[in-house]
Amino acid sequence: MQTTFAIIGVITLLVGSIGIATQWRIVRFISYSAITNLGFLLLTVTTTDETVYMYYIAIYALTNIN
Image (tube, rainbow, N blue to C red; front, side, top):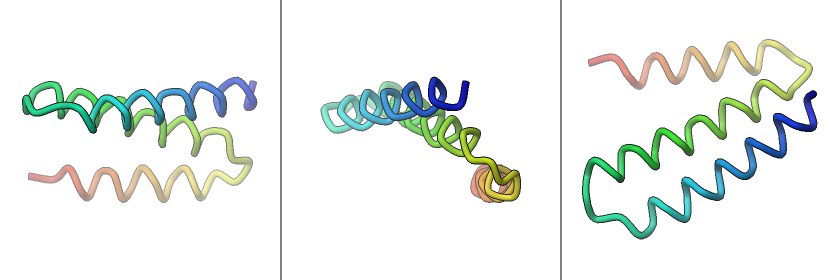
């Protein structure tokens, strides 16, 4: 299960990074950014240490405070 999440995480990172490099429209830029963030989230889920996951969620929540 963790291997599957890791593979999907790397694929979403690649798709998001390649897609974001070619966009000039802000809505698509934000969409590809969300895809890339999902890849990072999937990679943190694959770790066996839950503090890594909680650290990522805390930092992500702090950066999204308006």
